[in-house]
Amino acid sequence: MVLLQGPLWLLIFEYTELFSFSLSLPINLLLLYCILEKSGKEMGNYKYLMAWFTIHSMFYSTVTFITHMGFHIHGTTMMMFTVRNTFGMPRIGIWILFGICSICAGCVLLILCIQFVYRYFAMSHSNKLKYFTGWRRLYFVFFTLFVSIIYGACGFVGINSTPEKDLRIRQAMAEAYQVSPDDVNYMGIEYFERTETNDILLNWLSIGAASAINCYFCTAMTIILYCGIKTYKKVCNKTAHLSNFMYIQRQLFIALLVQTLTPTVFIFIPCMIFYVVPLFEYPMGVDSNIVSISLVTYPIVDPIGVMLIIKNYRIFLKNIFTIKSLCPSCKTTSASQPEGNLFQVKPFSENQGSLRFNSIQN
Image (tube, rainbow, N blue to C red):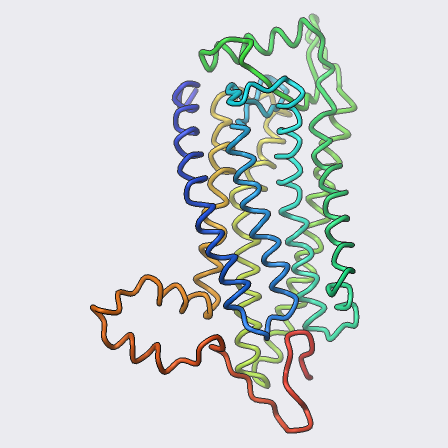
C-alpha cells in the first residue's frame, strides 16, 4: 500500500527542502557566532570542534539543496536519485554531487566521534589533548575526509548495470514519479536479483559495500558509547567538587548528546532502515522519500538544541529576542551580568591557578 503518490512526495520534499535550506543557514550562522564569540576561554579548543560541526552542517544543507537528492527502493535495489538537474550538469556531475552528499553524511558521525574523544580526554587529564592543538588538528581533518570518502565510494559499487537493466529502472522510476526517463539520474546498491527461474543471484560487490557501511556505523557508535559512558561517570563524580566549572562541563556534555541524538534520529536510523528493507523485497517504492525528508530536516533541528542548552548562548539569544523597551527589568538584569564572561570559576587556592577547560583538577 502506497502512502502517497510519487509526484506528491516530490512536491512535499521540494517545499521541505526549501524551508530547511532557508532556515538552516541563518540558524547555523547564529550558532557559529555564539561558538566563536560567546563561548568564553573556559571552552578552550573544544569550540573549534563545535565550529567545525556547525560549518559542516551548513555545507551539508547546501549540497543537498543543490542536488535535490531523493531515496527510492526498487525491488532489491536501494537508490539515491534526482529528477531535477537545475544547472544542466552532465551525468558524471550529478554522480559527483551524490558522492559529496554521501561523504557529508559519513562526516557527521566521525566529527561526533572526535568530539566524544575530546571530552573523554579532557575529563581524564590525558596528555593526548595535545593532538587537538595547532597543526595537529589537521590529523583529524584528513582522517575524517579519508574515511568519509571511502564511505561515500560505497554507493558507487554499482548494481551490475546493463543497458537493459538501466532502461528498466529508469522507466519504472519515471512511471512512479511521472517524469521522463531521461530526467532520472540515480546510483545505488543491489543486494541480489532474481533470474527468470526465480533463483537468487547475489551481488557480492554490493553486499560487501553495505557490510563496510554497517561496520563503519558500528565502530563509530562503539567509540561514542564508550567515551560517552566514561565521560558521564567522570562528570557525575566531579560535580560535587567543582560545582561552577563542572556545570559548564555538564552543559557541554549534554549539548554533545543532543548533537548525537539529532543525526541519529534524522539520518542514521532512517538510513539503516533504508539499507535493510531491500533484503526482504518489501515494495516500499516512492514511500522511501520519508528518508529524503528526514535528511533535509536535520540541519534545522541540530543547532537549536545546542543554543538552548548552553547557558551563554541561551542568554545571548534571550537578549536578542527580548524587546527591552517593553521589559525594563531586562535592562537591569542585563546590566548586572558581566559582559563576555557569564561563568565565573573560583580556584580552590592561590597555588592552584586558574582552572582551564583542558585541565580539570582531581
